Length: 307
Image 1 (tube, rainbow, N blue to C red):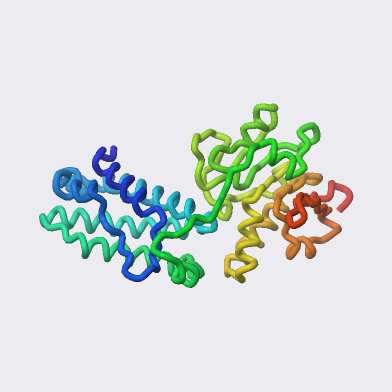
Image 2 (cartoon, rainbow, N blue to C red):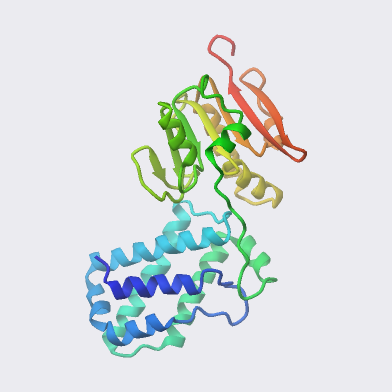
């Protein structure tokens, strides 16, 4: 179990630096008053992290908090398994540095914060090179990219979902922390499941993880839905000529192949740049306007015998 003082120190660090711009000149991650107190009053608790299991628990907590903080600032951060593993190594190094400082009896705040800041900068440069260009023009504190979770009733309307004819099982890719649509469908007796990077209240039918890492077995799902989630991110990378476009395109086709014959993928916004290449012998594509500039697409896998 993580000590209260260590946990409080971590939480305060993330709260103070939630919108930190790592590419603003001289913008180091300074310590909070709580962290300074930890280095004076909490040395025994830090030294206890020489135990590998205790250290691993703190590293996991640091990494999880970092993932959440990055994504709250910008929903387009890629936190798939490989990037998360690399981020975890940054926090392994941080814990090792802090334990070494406690062992020597000397905490050099300026040196420790500079090291940690440089490691996070290098992680960002390797995993999100576009953000260095984008954020180098921004101020010391970043403005968050808005990411809202929509009411279940609104999602039913936007995605053109009819509860009476919905094919099961249903998968919501990017269901949101509250998984509102999944919970509503299950209340109606529909076998629904969700995937999201962060789940507020875990359930057996909700999977915490990145959609790019989630494996979809072929021909399993009756309905797949994504409202301002997967396709929105796909468009984001497409408009920026991101190298991640290839990964999103591959996942998109994996999702279509995961549909049962007669099953449908409902998503918004639409993806015209890939929809036009879908074989009419395999898929029926319908685009429904939602607003003047926003539409929903329903891709249905041709029923057996009609392909």
